[in-house]
Length: 151
Image 1 (cartoon, one colour):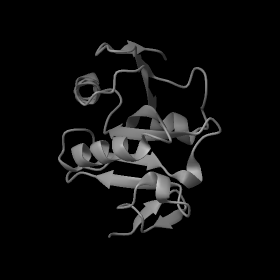
Image 2 (image 1 turned 120 degrees about the vertical axis):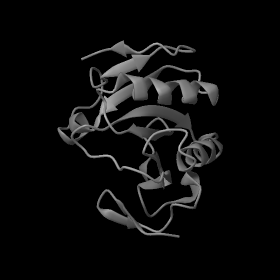
Image 3 (image 1 turned 135 degrees about the vertical axis):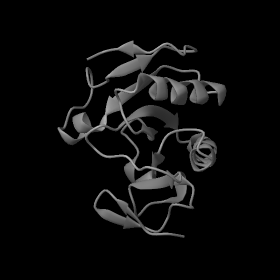
């Protein structure tokens, strides 16, 4: 396993299922190629139940490492699930303004079976502390590959 930076905590747990990690906030998957920067990058946000997170993460991790999705992905661990018992999985793209690539990743997520409503958020908004209602740059309604601009 390779150590990766993990939001202020070192993580040696990237090979472990998210539900089994209690000492790091994230597990990560990287593809070979350009890496994201926090000025232009963004991510699709998938909210997954405790029961499904390990299986869903396995599919996202495999697709990311095979360069079928974005530049990287991360999943919230047991140490970082939200108050409703959901784990967020972030699937990153290099440039939030590149709607062709943002759409390509969305279409691949849909092909992988993610049918629900999904939101896309700029990393610069995350760094600025923008969360909750109104934080999404784009949304895609259930079963759709259409992208709606929100901000």
